[in-house]
Length: 374
Image (cartoon, rainbow, N blue to C red):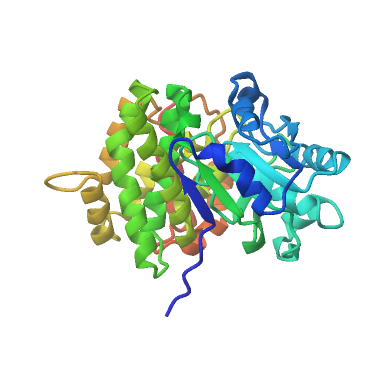
């Protein structure tokens, strides 16, 4: 019987951010480091969380997390944590902030530079600082996962920090905090959630509950992402997109695959990860045609497709309606070393969970398709 991993505890609904103070106290946290980014401070989101804290919770605000998480950002946050005598991490933001929070909880409780633990995650022990995640986007699933990516610097690819010990203690998912998310980020993060659910469903792990969660997440994204983009104040759509993001985080426990291998290989500091995922997905799905037809039929049904299933075409049509690019060249991507790209994708750890893994030559053709003309 396969082992089913337990997810972190979750609070979910409009208004649950108001309960954070009591939850922190229950974890023994009285002086949290509120980890976030400057954009969320400027838009008042961080203040809403701070205002929800009772007077006996004394938070230190750190807003220096960049759009893509870096070792420098983690180290600066850890320094602030220690300087102010903090006793836990409250990560409020998108994937960059939440992944940084996972690294900070290690950095403040383990000897040596955080880079040592990025290079060897097996060194991470259970002696980590408490961590509560509060997602402000609906897509990354990082509020639940036991992994994160941190870039050694702003120009190098992320290193994975994966350990059961960095799984958050609690995720507080309040769709209210996503109401002001702009359409472009709503689309990119929403399709990131779709990509997590898609790849997780196609993964080889024997986990029927996780598979069911993944299919339901796919269905929610297809039904609600456009509504959330058109009208950010649509509370029903925001609730369902937040749930789809949560389901994506749950589904990730099944594993991912070639789409994320490509997104990591093709990663660019100027391009949103969710956009990289959804632009890469159709080419990978077409590679799967004739290999995973039964699974793709299930995905097509979850997408509401009638007649002959066309998952790749459905993703492309949805991307187009959301204003997302059809190819990376269309998005302004200018790298072109196909040999390096295909070799890197073929060597990715994301392939380990996939039912079918492209060869290096097959990856080369997939990369050509993802890049597009130009």
